[in-house]
Each structure stands twice: as structure tokens, then as C-alpha cells.
Image 1 (spheres, rainbow, N blue to C red):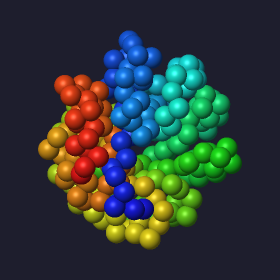
Image 2 (cartoon, rainbow, N blue to C red):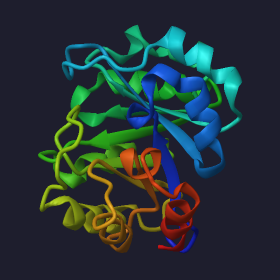
Image 3 (spheres, one colour):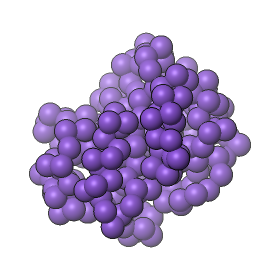
Image 4 (cartoon, rainbow, N blue to C red):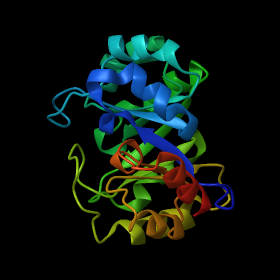
Length: 217
């Protein structure tokens, strides 16, 4: 983990114009280090969002890496299809329990990057067993599966704690949820090496200027 590198922008396509994803990807790709794709099974969270056939259709449109956040109680039910669709990184919620161990192994066997995410109520120390096996940790700053919520008061302190736990590991620390002009500097200062901007970039009046500002943090 190298916080001295420019902030990685994992742009959430959930906030793009979903009726025009092809044109949106072309518009956003110069400003995205990766595209963040939320997918769910309807059980872990009630939303569904991106699904394998859609990801497979989007994959040829850009060379920007796809980061899949797979919110599923049984990740192996969906993971093979998403890997076949061409995702480059897959993050699993630690709250899904032991089922994610096999899923992480499967991602790495496919030559892709694996990561874990933690909800707000999950102790930071839950990441410890996964440190030797993952490339990233995503800390949620809002409740999972909710769009447009405000940043939780605990988010920055949790990032700082996680930064200390991951020190000396080559693991990216990603802040997800409530990425706004007033929260992005706080999240960066708390140790985030990457953020998941949605509407902040997708709806920016001046996309190049917003991108340049985020990269300067």
C-alpha cells in the first residue's frame, strides 16, 4: 500500500446513465483508473444491479479494468459467470463468511485480483486472516446497497485504523460510499489509496477539472 501514489479512481457505473452505458463508458474512460460494478443476488442486499451477461457485453467497449463488488451470500453461484464475462478484480464482503475463502482462491486461480469489503458494523480486525491473500480492502462509508446516503461519522476513523493494520502490505485501501467534494479530501487524509466516485464524476459539470482535483488530493 503506497499512499504517496495518486488517488486511484474506481468509477462507479451505477451512477452513470444506465440507458446509455456504451456512450457513458467512452465518456468516462479517460478519467477512470477502473470501473466499479456492483452486483448482488437479491438476498445479501435487495438490489440486483449489474449481471454477467451485461458485463460481458460491456467488456469489449473499453480496456479500463472492471472491479466487481459481488454482494452475494453464495458468491460461487455467480462468480464463474462474472469471471468469464471479463472482470479484473472481485471484492467479496467478509460478512458472507467462510464461503468467500473458496471464492478468493478461484479469483486468484483465474489470474485476477481478489479483495474483501467490510460493512460499517464489522470490526476492522476482521480483515486480518485475509491479508496474505488479497490485493485490496474496501471500507464502506454508508450502509451497503444504499445510494445517495451521507458519509457515516465512523468512516474516517475506520480508514485510519485499517491503514495501520495494512501498513507494510501491498494492499489497496478503497473508500466506497458518499464520495463528495467535502468527503473525498477527508477520506484521502485518513489513508484511502482509492475511492469509488459515482455522481461526483459522472454528473460533474466540468469532468476534466473534477478529475484533476481528485488526482491532486
